[in-house]
Length: 222
Image (tube, rainbow, N blue to C red; front, side, top):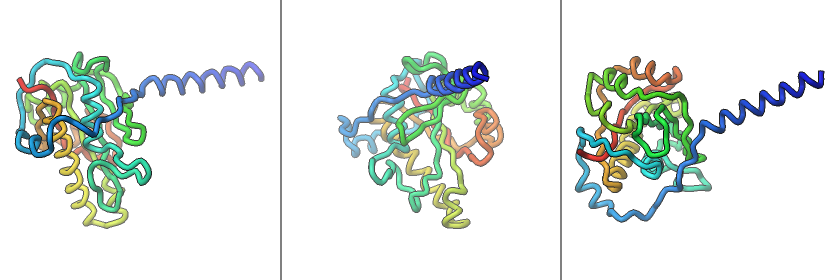
C-alpha cells in the first residue's frame, strides 16, 4: 500500500512538472515606448511581405499585452474594452520554426492573468493555416500568426443575441491594439478574416465553444 501511494505521489508530481514546463513566463511589458500613438496610427498599413528575421520573446510579450493584457492589477481590466467586462476573447500565437528567439515552434495560448503563454502542441503549422485561409501566402511567410478567437457565451449570457455584436466590436479593438503595437516595435502586421472556420478550428485543435475570428500574421516587413 505504501509503495502504491509513493508511486501515485510521484506520478502526480511528474504531471505537474510537465505542465509547468510547457508554460513560458513572458517579460514584463513596457508602457513607455519611444513611438507616439499618433505616429503609430499614421504609419499603420497592412503588411503582406515579411523577412526571415526572427522575433524576440519581448516582442511577443508586448504584442500579446497590447491585445489583451491586464492594465489594472486590482479590477483586472484589460487593454481592450469589453462589454460588461465579460472578456469573450482568447488570444493564441502560432510560432514558426526558428521564428522566435529561444521559443520552439508550436501553438501557444496567452494567459493575461499571469502574462504567460502555454504550449498547446508542438510543430510548425503555418502552411496548413495558410491553406485554410484561402492560400494567403503571408499566413505561412510571417514568422508568427496571432489568432483571436471568441467564446460568445461569455457575453451573450448577459446581453442575449446583441452580445454577438459586442464580441465583434471587441475583437476589432484588440486587433487594432495589436497592429499599432506592431508598428511601434518596427514590425508589420495584416488582419486576415477570410478563412474556413472549421478547418482553422481543426488545425488549431480549438475547443468546441471557441470561434476563430482573426488571423494576424506579424513580422519584420521585407
